[in-house]
Image (cartoon, rainbow, N blue to C red; front, side):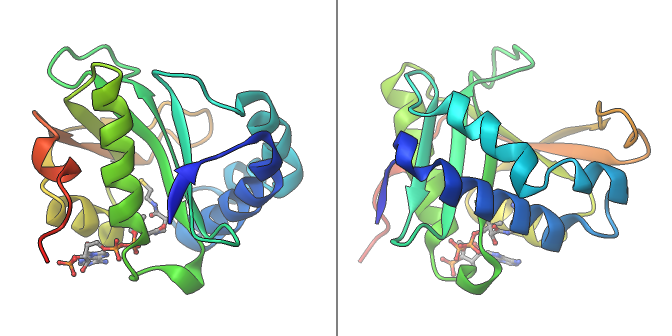
Length: 174
Ligand SMILES: CC(C)(COP(=O)(O)OP(=O)(O)OC[C@H]1O[C@@H](n2cnc3c(N)ncnc32)[C@H](O)[C@@H]1OP(=O)(O)O)[C@@H](O)C(=O)NCCC(=O)NCCS
């Protein structure tokens, strides 16, 4: 159900990205920032990124595409967390069906294959459903910082880390 995204997936990923940003972040981030992540604005960025080359990976889940994850080397250079999942988003209708777990596990596997066996994710402090998801999948709270984006300095993001993603990468029992 999870596969590497190709250049042909750019539109589907942009569509999931824009819709998920709106339904997840309204009320959490300023409207002007959310508007910056509309479909027409994000599509060219996905066209540039695809296809991803290791150590980056862009994975999609389900057909038609109902979610994606984007990962690569940690952006803050923390040696304890060499890899990072930069983004993981599902369409609202397909949440809670195992897609997020499959995408996070597969992203961790891609990172490990590229020599990055530890991992971090940053998530808005107020995004409680996503935080519960990372905690359920073994992420340990690492710390907090203000969001670095212009116009959203009031928002705080928190990090969850995996010192070793081996357990996360292992197939679910049963
Ligand atoms: C966060 C997100 C990626 C999780 O994916 P998902 O497919 O909904 O989650 P899964 O069905 O794979 O759940 C995996 C596990 O986490 C648990 N979980 C998921 N969401 C949860 C929640 N809100 N509260 C408690 N547990 C939760 C599930 O119960 C499951 O555990 P189980 O296997 O023991 O039952 C998805 O819901 C999403 O796209 N949300 C909106 C966008 C977003 O916030 N992205 C993260 C930005 S940092």
